[in-house]
Structures are given as C-alpha cells and as structure tokens.
Image 1 (cartoon, helix red, strand yellow):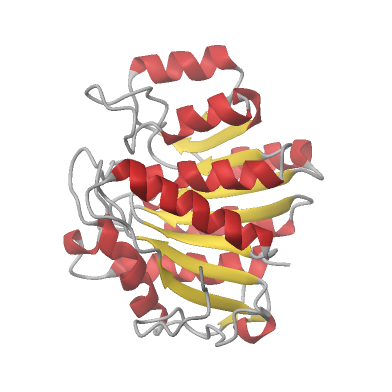
Image 2 (cartoon, helix red, strand yellow):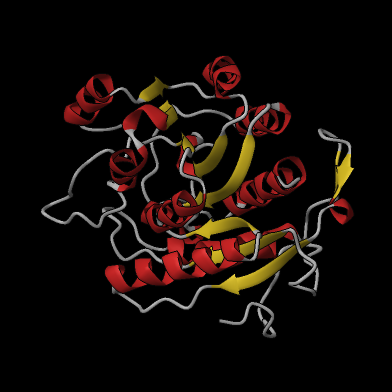
Length: 290
C-alpha cells in the first residue's frame, strides 16, 4: 500500500505533501453500510476537509499554529460499497500499516462501526490500551436486528477485546436498558449526559496510559450538530466538547490515535456540523499529536 500517491480530492487545511515526514496521518473511512436511521455519513470526511478551508490556522485556545504539526491527509480508504465485513478488514489492514510506520492515525468517519477495526489494530501495538468514548449513544449492543456488525455495537466489541474496565464513555444519553445494565455490571465506566466535568475527574486515574479517543459528533445537541444520522436531543455544546479536547491535550496520557465520526452533511444545509467538526480536528491535531 502506498500512502504517498497523489490524492486529487480536498485535503484538510495545511496538510503537508510529504507522508514520510508526517507525524500524523488524516484518513477517511467513508462507510455507512449499517446505519439504523439516516444514511450519509460516508460523505462526512470530505465535507470536514472542505469546511476546514474556513478555519484559522492558529488556535487561541492552545496558542499553537498548524505549521507546528506535521500531518499528511491521505484521503479516504477505498472501501467496497455495501460490504461491512470486507470494509472493516480493509480499515484494519490500513491502520496496521500506518502504525508500523509510527504514524498517529486520525480518522474521519463514516459510521461508528469503523472505530472497531481501528482499535483492533491499535490494541495489537498497545496491549494496555484504554478507550475514551465521547458519544450520545452507548453503542453497547451485541447485535442490531440480528446483525452483530452494526454501528450500535462497536463499544461492546471493544469492551470484549480490551476489557470493559478499560473503557470510559462520556456524554451518554441514549441506549437500551440492557446496555446500561451491562455498563453497570461489567466494570466499564459510563458517565451520563456530561463530558467535560467527569472527564476532568477521570484523567488523573489514567496518568501514563496509552489512550485511543473516539468522538461521535452526535454527542453534541442537534442545535450544534444537526448533520448526523441519529441525532439525539439534550446534548452538550460545542464549547463543552472543545473543553474536553483541551483537557485531554493537557492530561498526562499518551494519546495513540483518535477518530471523529458520524458527520452526515445531507441533513445540515447550514454546514454547522462540518464546520464544528473541522475545528475539533484542528484542536485534536494541535493538542494530541506530540
């Protein structure tokens, strides 16, 4: 696989032309094959890239400029349309190769199931891995209408892989009763409704840990992010999510990869969802890539 082939599409603002010199690699996972409500998140990665052109390259939050971080936008992983199993295998193989080259993987989704193969690959390199999961939905189902490969199952799969006690979920405000029972009984750490406040309390416990972070844009209230497949009222503000990103930037944890998923641009003619997502990605690059 070549990561330095010419990519003719849009790239995230200030992406470097040289893969070899990049510390981080932005890549898209344009998959929405298993969504249970509104499809369209496969178009999210490119809209985030396009929206990034409106960003300032300087962050007044972190007092850092994008020129200080070497990153390469590799475009989207080519995925076989409609085939979830083969798509997940392609993602796993892609991330495995990125990690072999010591790159920081920063993924753009796509539905939330895409996080599952990424964590599988990251766990191979970091066997003491912890997951920080920021989302409206628990994603703890074992299956959805008989299908285990579903965007409602990735966190349950990750619990089974790395140990439920190593999974920390924030902002959760939706799920089946059985999912909350599982969270209570399994030893995982699930925090309802809020993100920044419980995250600030948890981070000292994770000092020195290898951490993967996955953010579902629907953790935001639909007032801030209507462009998502399964919008859920009662969410947090963009300001609180920025606060959480900055808490992670300041924490004594080793963030080894991250993704931001479930941007579905068709449902947001204002483009506020993609605009917010692009700003979050800027702050993740500046704060998390060392």
